[in-house]
Length: 457
Ligand SMILES: NC(=O)C1=CN([C@@H]2O[C@H](COP(=O)(O)OP(=O)(O)OC[C@H]3O[C@@H](n4cnc5c(N)ncnc54)[C@H](OP(=O)(O)O)[C@@H]3O)[C@@H](O)[C@H]2O)C=CC1
Ligand SMILES: CCCCCC(=O)O
Image (cartoon, rainbow, N blue to C red):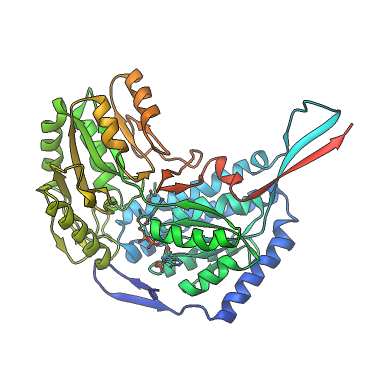
């Protein structure tokens, strides 16, 4: 269990430490969340809760610069990108604010037999536990908190230990927006306290975004206690290039979704580049050429496009992974070096499909290249992964796009586009990337009681 502390990955400076909760402090927060579920979540209307989420959205917008600076220092995100993350979080709260009454209106069900009416009413279930990661500190919480506060659930949230300042700022925004104490409680909790929370009868469900190991650990305890979980875990997303009218634009898209965004610390970021023979050499030349100009910089500077990784430990872990892929026979076409928490943009090629290290998620600015001779081989390589989060397909042939989209084992398929996530589009994966969906209308159904109300004629 790491200490809750702000450790600037760019300077290595420990800026501030925060004490973990005592068991009594934790109990007080959970009891308050349970009480607020009963006195607020079950008694207010979707319109009232939706209006509060609108205030939350507005406060993210008002506090944009301060919030961006906080996470840039906590996890090294370039401050410009941090501002865009704040914008995305605000948009998620706004989306559920605007759709509260629609998503929570009674859903009529047609009767096959008998007289009268039948509706499904989505009612809250109680206190939910969230366990969230450092890579998008505001966005990851928003996609869990927004639909569930809209539904009338209350939340206790264990954020990453390296995000204590942003997690406190989020709790404060909910209070300043007018939500009652207990609607959202930030927990500087230990792992042992989280284990006990999952089993606590007041906790009705758990949402985890993070690694497979944490997902499995939480889901195991939740399973023993008959608690539902949503797991948003890792990914090793393929970026398939079969044809293009503009290779420069396709390479730019690949650079964006592997290197520019969050230094590649993005679960649904493309990580494996599966390129058709006829385009491969030019694709590689353009990618490696562009990376020669991209060096990790100071995330607090507006002009910085590539920051450090979230910590020295994360960079060392990535360095070890790359070394094992190379030990398995891969070639380093660019990068491959580390300086503290900064990892150089790296391109790996000649990766044998038996290279087990290459099947791991490389959570940083490392592109793994695969050369293929056909659509069928591209799909085979793409699906040869324990993960199934997102995927990208670039082709000028729409029929081919549909065939490949249908064939890919992934929760999301993006065709000729990157960075297309929106508050209204479902996010989630299959296989070892987890289960459940966040964002859009599907997120509403994860932790509500879809109550049938059948009234006789
Ligand atoms: N699908 C998605 O959207 C995302 C998936 N991920 C995946 O997560 C990994 C990187 O993120 P990272 O933060 O290192 O992931 P971790 O799984 O290590 O951490 C995620 C969260 O789980 C907590 N945690 C870790 N161990 C325990 C435990 N035993 N009991 C309770 N909570 C625990 C962490 O707390 P603490 O910080 O105190 O250890 C953190 O809050 C990568 O594999 C990445 O693919 C990351 C982001 C998004
Ligand atoms: C803006 C999209 C962020 C995705 C979060 C992730 O995949 O880690």
